[in-house]
Length: 151
Image 1 (cartoon, rainbow, N blue to C red):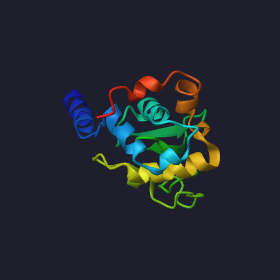
Image 2 (cartoon, one colour; image 1 turned 30 degrees about the horizontal axis):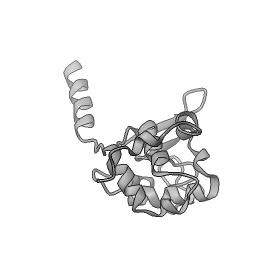
Image 3 (cartoon, one colour; image 1 turned 90 degrees about the horizontal axis):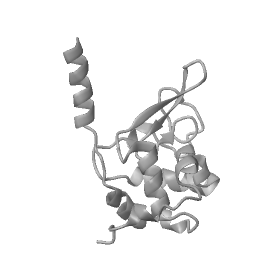
Image 4 (tube, one colour; image 1 turned 120 degrees about the vertical axis):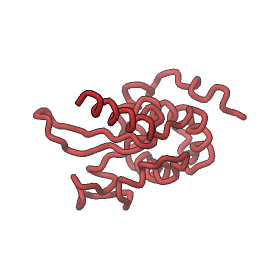
């Protein structure tokens, strides 16, 4: 039984697509997210680091105090299913990004869907919509997230 659990964990980890910090910085710098001058590429890289550890396949359940799943966060920026996309927990929710949450889970460097939805979120609520950014990045020195990413 222990071997089966270990194998399952190993397969999950080995199938994850981890982007580099500079992959995220380059994607942000070449995207609509530059239209929000209040937030830098370093802010987005900091968010991706703390929200998903740069894992494009990251999924985390958001539970209430009783441990009941209320929603799920998806992808590199951890976009929430309660408001922004549709999944099995919220198939008829607001779905403000008009997409299925699974589009944020890709085993590639293509994070365009994540970026497009993140742009909508930041336009409506700012990066304050992400607790990971507020707790770990807001008002902090984040410039180092873009160091050596100019090439």
